[in-house]
Length: 376
Ligand code: PHE
Image (cartoon, rainbow, N blue to C red; front, side, top):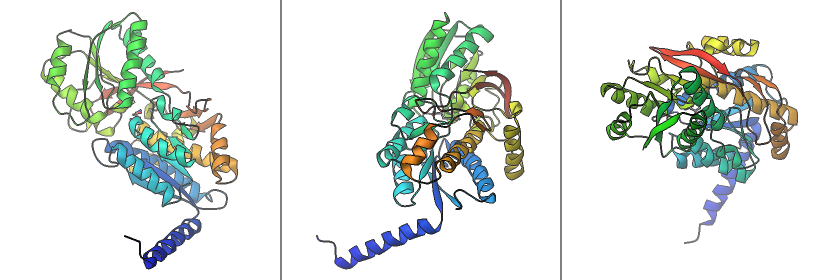
């Protein structure tokens, strides 16, 4: 059937109105992250950090003489939602730069859209190496998993003096699979052995088959490079089955909800992150923590700090480019050097990854406590 002519006319008018609208409203920046679902903490925390940076920016005159508008899209933790969210942000909202995602698997989906459209994307916190390999328009302000795996393997071998560790990974998450492998390589290079490796999928609620198999090997610790919802369930089930060793993990543990379910099952266990409130000693970090507390009446997580820094790095790129032109902005971002953010100094290397320190945190009854910092 042919499209009636009046409908085409309506379409053209709507498209014109859309493009006028985005011009009138200044510079548009998009954020895509999970604000609902089992990783809702990721998007909610990240968005708070981004909004704090944005409010400050607009209070000081915006960028290139214009106000900056943020449009945020919820991916619900779903890869195809991530693809459509980014498509919407660019094609309908006219975003000139994209912030997000948190989960590496979703950054891979959204990143492909950005790369195809030549719109720069800055992931705050996706740590899988493949994310920035999607193409030359994809950047991140966090460290990558080979480093994070090394940090936790060295901590297990040298600080905790463990030689027998098991791995329980989320086989559907590129982040989890990659970090499990990085940990295995570094831990065995240290002379340790991985006594068993088991897998689950996000959304699983029972882990007894995997835990029974693991516990039969009597490991000193279980490395669980997953996201906080399943990590909390795994710990509860393992403690119920009598597991008394340590749990170890990566930044995916870092949702504030990890410990809010009146759950002490992970108290004393350790994970790595990109930021710790109680180690925020630089003026920029202290200022960030103070303003975050004022605005949200809680402490910022690593996610919020990285969201804040991703936004600042994008704004800095636009400022240095002196234009919102895609190619100029991409080139400006690629030359980000010694940018001082809340999470430390950010220099993007030739792979468009930040090379930064990690902090090791210990889980407490209602929060996380700083243990130590590991430099690259
Ligand atoms: N690094 C995780 C990933 O790549 C995401 C994450 C970062 C989650 C920081 C929590 C805190 O999938």
